[in-house]
Length: 89
Image (cartoon, rainbow, N blue to C red; front, side, top):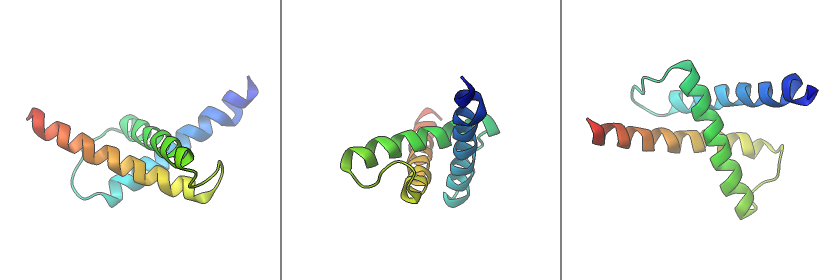
């Protein structure tokens, strides 16, 4: 239980925040996401990158390439979000 509160979930949220903020900074345009949705975006990007990168054998857990892939995954999700938002409007 200590790992969940001591580092696991908090570390995931922190990395999600950093990946989400970097993705929003690197992708042009105004995405109008709250801080909570930025964190969710970063975590979802990390999960997407972990699934694809791990499945293809590009990198292992804890490698710096995983963080870079997390930011790229978050950018992909931002682009998809932008397309979905434009279709609704």
